[in-house]
Image 1 (cartoon, helix red, strand yellow):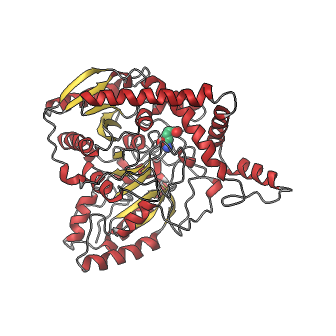
Image 2: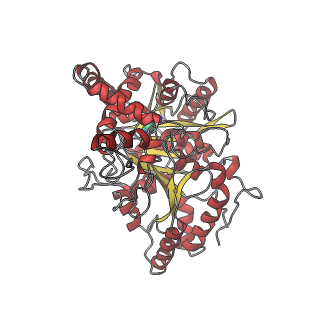
Image 3: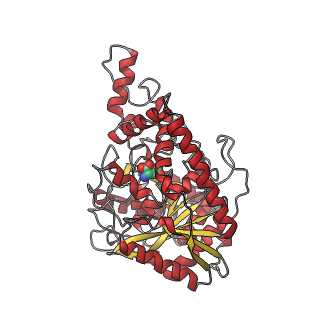
Length: 499
Ligand code: GLN
């Protein structure tokens, strides 16, 4: 029997389908593992073992009745900004520390309909603002590859939990890189779908024109399976697309012969770690060996402006979205106030952490009279330039490849006092959100024994090609099979077999 820490969703599905293991057995094994491993990596804000076992039991009954879908009975951990009915959803913020949503996000509804087993909710940077998990109001998740390093962010808990074998997959969100960057830091697959591919209903809003939900998985086939399960039109999200959702896994054949790949040179930024560059160059060579036609002389000249555009538009949208936390309707409310103004002021003062406040202030400033034209409007215009450059590039190339991050996972505490150096870790992921296109980070290789992610970007709604290129690379290299030291079976490491 396969060890649960190396198991993929697809393999677990086969085991469930052939009744080699039950969902309850599988779930128990993960609950035990979480108990042993999570005190070391701190990936979870809330654990829901009772819910998980109840759902596993229901899944087993469903399976016994011959009704099994790809995710039926499969244990998952969900980022703590996606609403789960009756289960605390904190956004890793004091503001929502005791918030229990009265409804499920559409993604959760869909997973439930498919027989979800929810192990709990994962830690993140507060309101998804950050790249390291250090902005969580509760604690910092550790990287299972090196506990003194960050797992990336903001979906750091989601990535670390999958990399450490605490769940078979996780759901995260990506506004500027929050799925891809932690996936890269933890040697797993992180997919940011096209804007509108997955309904955002029930995901707590950070920057609504950029936010998107997606899977974090051990391999590309699992990402394909999860995307098919969660994507599709939803009348509760007016930006969700009516485009049909393919069975992405059927389209994975690993054949990329003749495929045109562009490598935009602006992604090899100054300050990029030299050995990360070496890994990415080797990855590009590998794609060429696999038969793709690679052009390494592509230019997307507005790319360097993406960081500034994101850090204007993101905070502007955040300042509007977070205005709802007034200490009155829901969330944290400061008690001993004299009047309504004080309630709001004090609730926001104590409810929000420093990075959230920084962004609300930046956004409010950039939207204020006299500055709107200089900042917000200008950023929107540059956004159009970035979108146009991508459109032109995709007339010539099927996909673009680049690093996911210019560096390997950094040390906890290394960048937290320097917001700009923290923001710079996102330079390679932000343009994708600005343009609304899909992108994936796939295990690309290693530098100093730490994971490096290869980023692949594609045309809007062409997740199929995107995943197939990732699949070709993954199958040729097998880097995803190398496990984080913490995930490797050792006595006391939570090694478990289901059943
Ligand atoms: N790290 C980026 C930020 O700090 C992106 C966050 C995200 O994608 N949610 O905003």
